[in-house]
Image 1 (cartoon, rainbow, N blue to C red):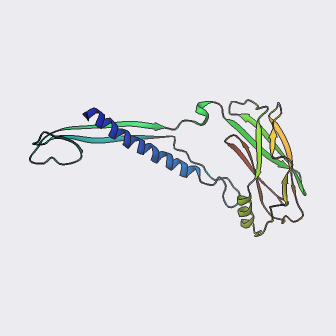
Image 2: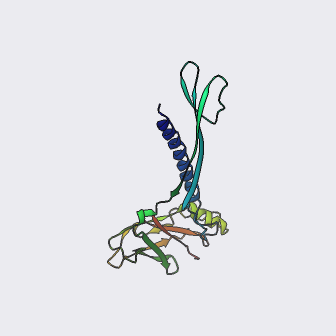
Image 3: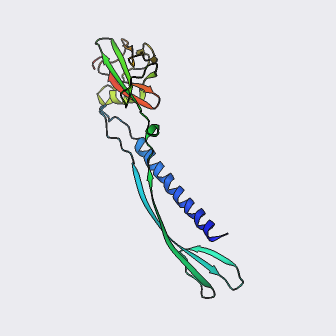
Length: 214
């Protein structure tokens, strides 16, 4: 194999492995819950870029029987002649902004009212200020997080399944980028229970906590 091809293939393996490690690290950061046990937002972290420098030494060894070997970081034997090439490669991994730099969706979710019913309102726009008309927004009740937040609030058995209902799970925004529905609470829902409702527009998500006493 030519020296250039050997170097290129080896460096490609190292750089791809480094890129995979960066991706794995960012996935671990992204997996951190956006809310703490009390339902408060927690910091989210991103890796904007990573500078790297790879130093290497290529040893080209010619043995007595004429065969050639290509070695990294290996001493040369006494019965052979060799030549060495020492070099380094440096660069930067840069995170591609979501949407490849295009305006991103911005979603807000609010709840108003009291008693057994709350009015839910969503507002969809973009980071450039454009109102998103005709956008499809999906609403969900995050059961696992709701139960965890309720337990943290002192309600061990909130009885959320069957006692929390959305008027509509899928909304379409009007020309002003707005849409609304309601969430109702059944008689068996424990007072003090915390219900986390999420609104999703593509990969953009908004969250709000509500309940009979919230």
